[in-house]
Image (cartoon, rainbow, N blue to C red; front, side, top):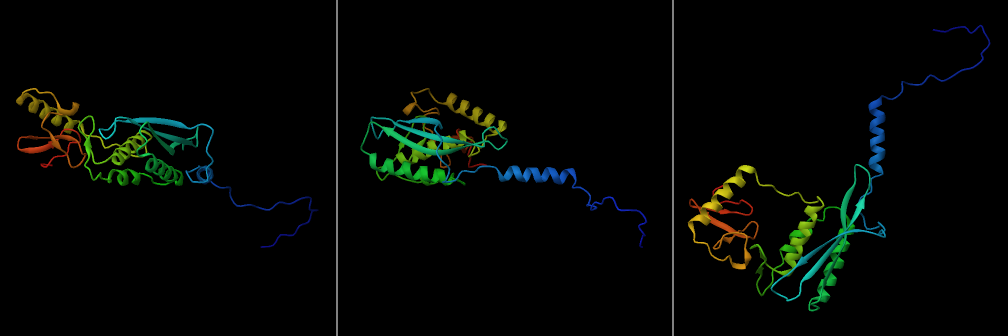
Length: 233
């Protein structure tokens, strides 16, 4: 349908489509924010200051302790996407017998940290190293197959601290049963000096799941007092 224009044209404008909905605008803003999130990658420059945690390892393999320091980088500080990620690791000790392989190990681990992504695989790789001379029990009754494995144990503890590995929590019901079994087990046995300052009853067996001497037999069932693993389900 046509219309005749009988008056002088004084101005014009192009008719636009309806403006975008509020939801679409919010989605666009969220996408823009996500695109500005900084992830860990090897091109990130090292800041002047890093947050660090130092862990002490004392093994029967050496009279001197090892001190493991893991420094973390704080990404997207002050935003909803703030996260703490390991950036580098150092191992120091008075014992220089293992100096070369310790320096090599720390450099490789630091390089893996800076690559970003899922670095939790390092824990299993380190804990799978076995000493041909045999392992040892650390304080608390946990078995360590090698010094490298204990370094992996420290890395796991740190990754749990910063939230990269989620801790498997034992339910209240299961913890109650474990406490009752432990109390009954200790009541049935004469009190003796715990070997190796173990936190679990003397005579406990090694748990195949958590490598801790905390497995006892109660009611005909082998149960770990540390992680709750049981042959009876």
